Length: 316
Image 1: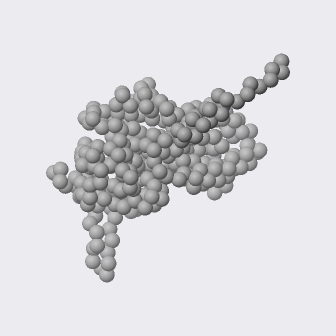
Image 2: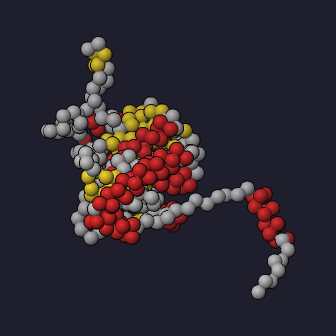
Image 3: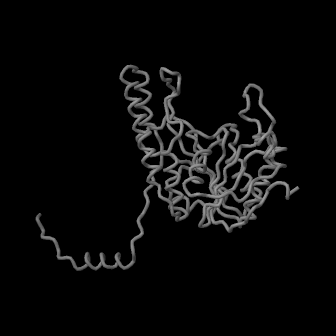
């Protein structure tokens, strides 16, 4: 059955794998589905493999009543003839320089089969470090950097993770909570694949309990600032060569628009104003600042200048 779980086109040696899922529970701000899709386009990544037909057969329903074709498998025809099998899209992409992007669809059934296919592909790629990205909605002040939480599969990862402004999650420790797909895979990695390093980063995308005049939720549905705050951590963590200026610009623009919307709501709604102000006070995040590595020769020259600088006069 193993050969039916993953279809291979090539096997580049991977250093890191960034994974996300469309049509899933923890996709606030479209972080889980949107960030991998952005990276695939931005980096010109090419598909190298996908999960096989056995995963499609065992892990998904044919349809969900009342959702039209949202959860049905994709089909396509050319002049009346089928041109692709009915499979779900769980695909791996090579972005170059050892970076692999995975964009999948959350399974409905048989997490054991889905996980076996995922970790089989990871092993055949050389067991890279895995980062799963997800998002959740909350009253995050849009003008502030996003809060990024983390769970991880191995205890020896924490010392390194401490550098990156991450909040360590206590999800499920006080009451029963079901896992997201990324949480499930990190948990399985911890217990069944102890050789792998896998972590899940989850960012809070701004979404407030108000509705516009069109009954649309007040928030950021596609939150590029969350994309940016996750990626700047991964850029530093893995020394990735990627320009994040576009994500920052998009994120700042979206955040400014939401700030203006919230200000207008607060002008006429005292209850909303109180909630918006309280969200700023209660917002919990770990700031992250990147360090700049200076050229050793330049660093030495600056040290010489400071060492030989004349003493400043005492003006006391």
